[in-house]
Image (cartoon, rainbow over all chains, first blue to last red; front, side, top):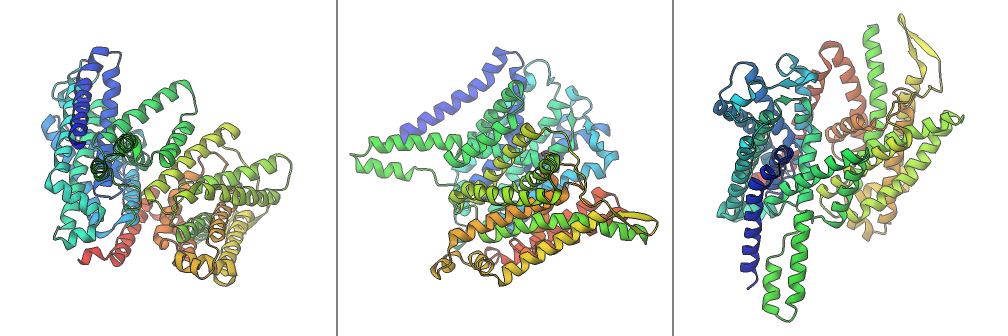
Length: 345
Length: 286
């Protein structure tokens, strides 16, 4: 009675959002495609964190390492004469997957806080690497990317809309694939494992296989972000690998809300837009972002999208007070409390 | 030999201040399971208190006392007020809350004091000869002061009633509460002692490094490493490892580049954490 229309409404909203993403920025112009490109690029690692934290309940604060290694791979290879776009893409994704292989090992050997700390230490370790390998990485000065148009399948990231549409297509593809996987039997098993791994193991699910799979899958998404960053910005530097980039991805996903696939992307767009606007108008952007973070923690612990969803459910509950059957349906559809301590165990 | 002795002394000085911050962090984690990202910012506020006191013509040591009183007591209680509602929530929310607080504190400090680095003169100006070089006496005072404070903390935790209560709550909060331990007061104490240790570290460090709003960031990461390696929530382990880390970093830098030492330390701590997590994990054996 209630789930059907709600689901249809949600699907229509997401489809409209996707269409608007392709059409509105190029029509509006004024560097909007470039700005949205940045939101999408940084939205991909946030989506990766959202999937792994929101559904597998593994809070990874080291995704910057995957993103940064992927971006550095592109820059280093172009300096060694590799300019084939497909080869570069595969190399970047491969390097990112190798790093996420480390996180997969952590997922197998640790849970909760230990997992979180391992990912924190890993991203910090990767942050020190460029300074050690200055000949290869350019050290503190960073490293430029050669042949940007050639390696971007002939699309110029600065001029025209071709590169922007490529970015949109890749992002939408990852979102649809993630949504499909989460809706599938395997995705539901993953969610069950995230909520209660012991029970899921007792039911015969291979907990570690699922955890490794979701880690590698989300690592590939983050690596895609790193590859696209290198193409779009033609320059890589050590901060991409470090804690600040990793923590940003976590913030974007948690602020947007990890219950929905689009939540992390909306969180990225919202927070980066806020940062840009505040950066132009005031020197206090750090203060406002800190306050925004506190507001989310205390008032919207399920993120903005999760908050909207809860309001929707609240509205339905009031409407269905006289109809106990509908009320039961509403309760079934309520989001799980992601932050009720499930990440702790 | 002279270079070796100087490297060890430098390592001890860095390790001593790190030990104070890490011990506070470990204490808070042990009792409340909270990893406080803003611990480094409490250190920064402690350093600014000393800079303010010295700038207003007061004694350095009065600044240290003020730092402990203001940052330790007022800051600790404020932190408690902020984190108390999150005590039974996910680590993710607590981390985000302390991260938000850290951003706010850094920006407020920049607004009030400015972003530039401010020097603070050491209260003890003498030097002692080590081989052909002179070594500042104040640096050694920092090591001794940190050792005395940490030893005091150890005695407090081991023998004093509130210290024993702290350990009891850390081990089993519900059981401690059922046995009549005032859990709320113990929490308040943990927050105040943890913040106080950070404030002392900041105020003692002020003459060694300049004082600036982001000075807590580097210390924070190192303190996290120490707390993890020392065993989460292990006060003594954190203190000892902080000293060890300071010395290893300082000695290692004599042989290999500083970044390689960093990488090595990270790799070692990661391995240690994996081994510990493996031991504690039950699910793996299912």
